[in-house]
Image (cartoon, rainbow, N blue to C red; front, side):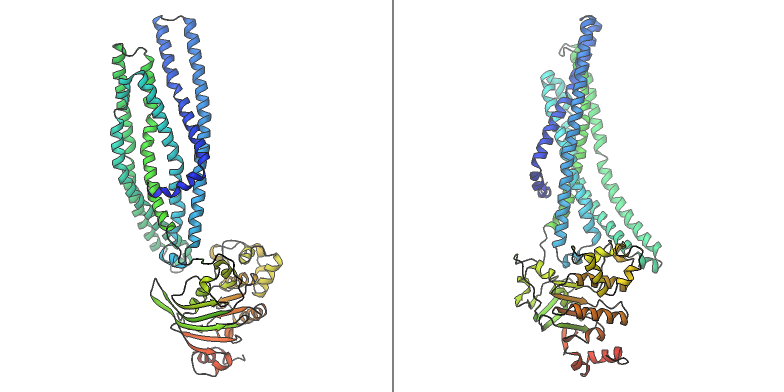
Length: 584
């Protein structure tokens, strides 16, 4: 139960609802226990009438009274049971909602290194399957526990007052049942954890297969992919079966023990009635009903134990992530003003998961309104500079200054609000084109959306769609071509009108004519704004105020287009290769 302490704060949050639910539950069980008593009285009345101890008129009156009480108790019990389920089960849904939000918020706070170390399917499983298991503990498990405790306490008090010896024989099998539950619950906890882990593996594999379905089909490996999925499903099935085998021992054991209790009540109660120790024959019938009423609560002891064990295993998996501290922390809670001055001072960065040195002693200064172009071979560290500017990672050595302030002392939200970032891999959401563009500015007007699309040279493409800007995109923007996705991603950055604009090789999927149109638009909108363009094309870099060339994380060349094109090195070679045949 140690892991489940985490959700105690939610029980406290909804304490009044829970308290009301508990009171309703106790009331429902108390009224439910009137039924055996009135049935027992009715049988005693019938027995007395049969033996001639009471007149027919008295028989009819007593029987009618008992029946009316039975109906009243049943109606009240039904109403209370309805309210009980509505209250306690609803609380479990509130807790599920809060816990999912807490997990999702934590996912949002954790840095990119966390996502490199964990697979998407596992993250999804913990926020869905595992939270669902915890909900069963917060709702049904608590409700049936209260039911069982109330029923046992009230029933046993009355049973002892009527026939102590018969009560003893009735509950005799219950300690044996407790021992069985204790032994099996430990096994269930272990196997539940294994089942959840295999479900995570299955979710991860499925998610990756669906995301990469075009690659699977292109290579014609559907059958091989299915075989792998089938093998993983088989392993998951076996783990489920192993858990079910243990769970299956509960109910037969309980039914057997309850059956023994029924036999003992009938035999011992019958002997006591014959010997005059029990005065009324109805008491035996009453005890038989009590035993059968206790059958389901006793059975739920095993089921509830199972729920608790599974919930604890799931909450343990959830807590593993909730306890993780994000690498990137907002050290300044006061909003910061971003003007756009950037300085790198001997910055070095090594990726912790691969130990690859992406940047090695990088230094440059960029004043507000200037444009910097970064070129270099694949893996030279270009994108890492942009990631560090957005504080997706923190530098290990050196300093990054924003407007003369160390970047980790700048308010994180203000920093990211002040940056418009177009990644190399344009990611679009399964939403309308308009909403994807508005992602950078949720309150943007339709005119602003259209203007941004025109500047990104994608407006004409959008208007050709049947629903225009209200066209719903497929997952990851699969409806669009690579160039269209990149241009919508550019429009998303433009509409925000940030002070710093970062473009990570975002024109690689467009032709040179479209590139020129977009660059012309960018020159217009970036006037007075600090801009960094990462590219493999000289055409994207030629108009920049400053150009740096990276190689193995180091700056090997820097200057303007005019100076670099007349200096032997990577830039001149790239210029000759790409643009020697056309006028720049």
